Length: 205
Image (cartoon, rainbow, N blue to C red; front, side):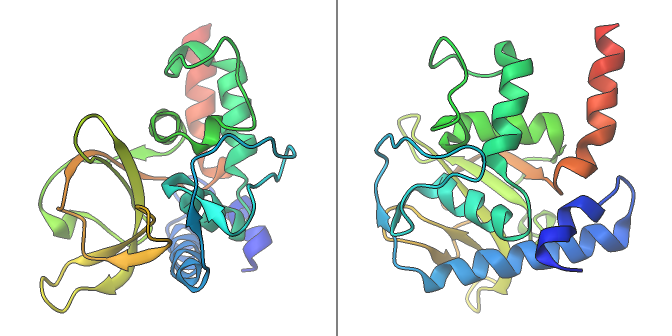
């Protein structure tokens, strides 16, 4: 399965495709640690679709966005398209969707993953978190953060570690239980969310 085709091939209920997708996604997240990234939350106008801020800058959300893009999923496009159709479901930060920034906000990704992916239990049982899972936290003072569970375990705790950027560039660290967990999700791309979209349409009738 190639990276570009992987997302399109993940159908709801296809366990083997989901496992392969997660494997490729985690591989992409781990590869992110090879990049030097300066933490920079500045608003930047970017192309659409497929837009990105300069490769040597970014925040926590950009790590998730870049890992998904490496396996053929454009979160800029997916989030923007969903916000255009369901703007009232998202936190109100502006009068209309903005493809330059909306996908780079943790709060918007939380809503998007809950709508189009799988919302899983928030727990401090580390064994409930699998490679490829997305986790959000409150760092304190309502400061949000997001990272991805990878397939490397901490020798000290035995827990799967997290690939994230909290200000020091992309790192893999044992931080799953370091802050208050506010969200736990799995997302396998737009094909896997087709059933969710059908459910939305049925509810709207």
